[in-house]
Length: 128
Image (cartoon, rainbow, N blue to C red; front, side, top):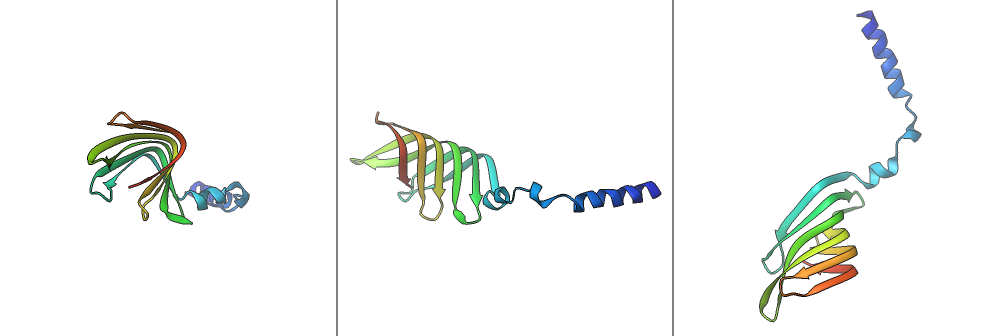
């Protein structure tokens, strides 16, 4: 019993003496909410479903409406000439603004459409 009390005191001192410089405060404050294998689904302004998958995602305190994502893929629907077109998207990174309901894609952006259109670019914004 005495050994447990002594060990508890030693253990507590070690915790109290952990240098604060060893804690990466920037990572703690900027990446508060982290997700892996995140899947976001919703309905766009036309009432059509969309889905976004990200290998990793995070939210930051300073920008709570935005989800920052890496290794992104997904499906969106749009209309052109009265026809419904499904777009499969891929990108290295994305920012999904939940309030503005838009998706900003960055880095190796690829769009393959059901009508045969293909787009390759470094940056694209999709209004959902």
